[in-house]
Amino acid sequence: MQKLIIILLFFIPILTFAQNDRTFTNENKIYLPNIKTVLCYNSNKEQSIPVILLNSSETIAFSFDDLLGGTKNYWYTVEHCAADWQSSRISSIDYLQGFDSDRIVNYRYSSNTTRKYTHYDLTLPNTQIQPKIGGNYVLKVYLDGDKNQPVISQRFYILDSQMAVAAEVTNSMQVSDRNSKQKINFTINHSIAIPNPYQDLKAVVMQNFNSNTSIINTRPSFIRPNQLVYNDLNTNDFWGNNEFRKFDTRSLRFKGDNVKDIYRDNESVSVMLFQDAPRSAGAFANQFDENGNYFIRNTDGRDDKTEAEYMGVLFTLNAPAPATNGEAYVVGRFNNFTLSKENKLLYDAGRKQFYANIILKQGLYDYEYAWFNNDTKTVETQPFEGSFFQTENSYQIFVYYRRPGARWETLVGYTNLSNKVSDR
Image 1 (tube, one colour):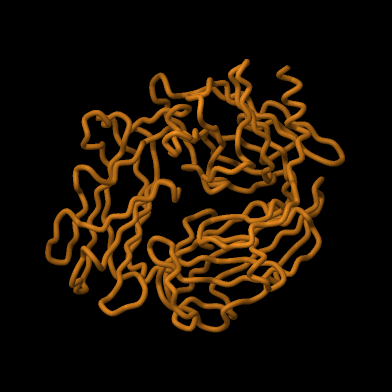
Image 2 (cartoon, one colour; image 1 turned 90 degrees about the vertical axis):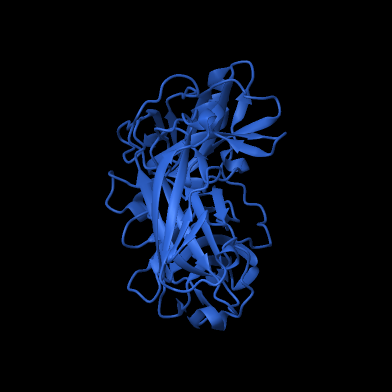
């Protein structure tokens, strides 16, 4: 039975070319099943948080693959958003120099790969489009110049640095959570007058650049001269979770970390990972991870972007369902920690096993298993992964300020904190 399920999963069609959603959202989202491996980061460091300084030489690197191959007429625009990612509803003249849209003209065809695809890339700012104010931005890619044919929406940030953020990771102040949660305390140092910090300033705290974990702070605990302190006992608590699981497919000639078998033919490549076990019980085990990140790599060829293979990766989790009303998913930054049909796990109740076959590009991947509780409408990793305050996580803090009389919120402060919480 198990072999039959595995065979069926390997031959499940991994691309269904249905009509796309006709409406853009201001979240990280792919609207077409043939679009894969959307990357967006500060060009200075691969897979870094996509934050660049306003009026600097820094740029955003953005790319994606089209598994239908050939050449498409992809266009893009950018939109300014508020701290909560709702549209700022201001004219593009207020936040852009140059044009408000342009065509993506840089593309290359894959070579020496079983599955053919086309790789597209873009750099922002560029000679056509330059954001001129700080804030949240959404890059929107659409087909044939028609915004009713959305392809990708991708968030990035322009920092107009006016405030410094000092932060620390500590244990939760709640006694019952001290072994499983981490708390973020931070201070905003500023030299500009803020007439009403309770109304004009917002600070968003996020764990591992996972937007599902975002906490919006609007009320500082203390207001001091040129300082706003956020250390309330009951706020900014995060589950410590566990170190991410990982696998290595940089080479398809040899079995890398956590790879059990590799199957290839003239039409496809399939990778079977070793079966995973739940980690919710037992002691914390420290291991190096990339805090949910992933990196496209191909040591069998010369060009990671166009010579890396696309693979069907089989995940297996040996665990009973945590509840009768819910679904399990494989998540990581490779899918923006979202829950979709592409990364949903099938459940074999008889064997108490979950399975999923996901198409991914060759490289190094962090991942974890999450459970969506249909009764509470919450996403939980604790049933499969456990949660420990010793886990190393990264935290991002974004500070937004709306000047008196201004029509938009500006990103004026940012820090990326990565600490190892010591055992106390």
